[in-house]
Length: 315
Image: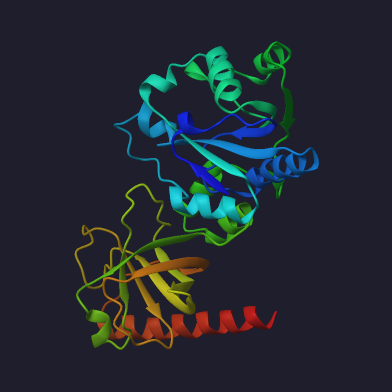
């Protein structure tokens, strides 16, 4: 897959099959569109193109709203797209000025002029152009004028719920990583740097790595204890992660911390990069009356998570 960070440097293709959108999370609904795009491009001797936008339009249009958290960073999104066989990822810088582009100019100058669209494949709710004025109806009016084809994909359902990035974010905000996985088609994960904490874990026999997520827009699941899979370099480990304010030992008004205890591991990994995939939420975060109570609960958590992984691997 070729990644194009400057659309002006992209040479229009002879036969480009195009879809557009932010595609945050690259979830199962997105995959229906993308796989159809890739399949049709191969069958007809064309190339598949995803026109995406960065930063996310909401971040540009509502700069004071910091509530939007994203499922994937740019790098994570690119890696997911590469695994499915997309030919081109074109990233259009989203600015206030670009947001004022009319639907007509967007089709004429971007889709046709820059990408050389032969066929446009889009989701059922696709809107585009200034104030989201463009619609499937307008596209159908423009296709004969600019000589390209269009196909609309219906909504994708799982458990009779329409899949959307918004619903996946809501599940993760509630700590419901299993529902998120069903909608995404893969385990939700995050990456960060291991930094020094207060080293209390060493004292109670559960050494933890404190993870600092450097991308402030990356969504961190809601508080709780999770069964996780940790990747260090190219090696995977099982473990458990606590997300929360550590109410037993710290001021509840302190910030959120992410602490992971890696099973059967005792190496110094400060300042190393770490990736964590969330497999199952085990329980809520709790305040215990003593460190001994906390230690006892951690023993129970570890036993439950170890049994969970053993059973999972057996199947």
